[in-house]
Length: 95
Figure 1 (spheres, rainbow, N blue to C red):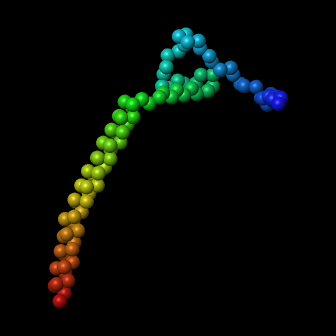
Figure 2 (figure 1 turned 120 degrees about the vertical axis):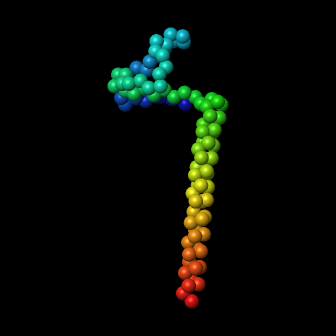
Figure 3 (figure 1 turned 45 degrees about the vertical axis):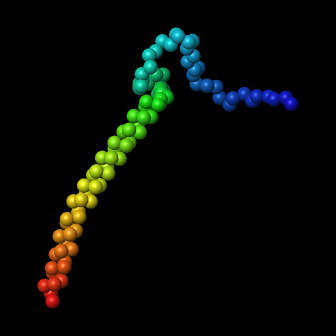
């Protein structure tokens, strides 16, 4: 079988930057403004410590949300009891 590659329909607009090992001239920054009219996005890998910290943050948020919901429930229990008692007393006074 003879495999022929087709030429690309358009040429790349710029050459990729290739730095030899140990000769990178730029330091890593999380955000860098326009470079040549394009954005550069650096994405780092999340290690075990980062995953544990993210899980811990989610757990703390869920606990806080649970306390808020529990507080709202405990607030409305006496309010509902007063409304039921008022309805019972109003029903007894009508007779």
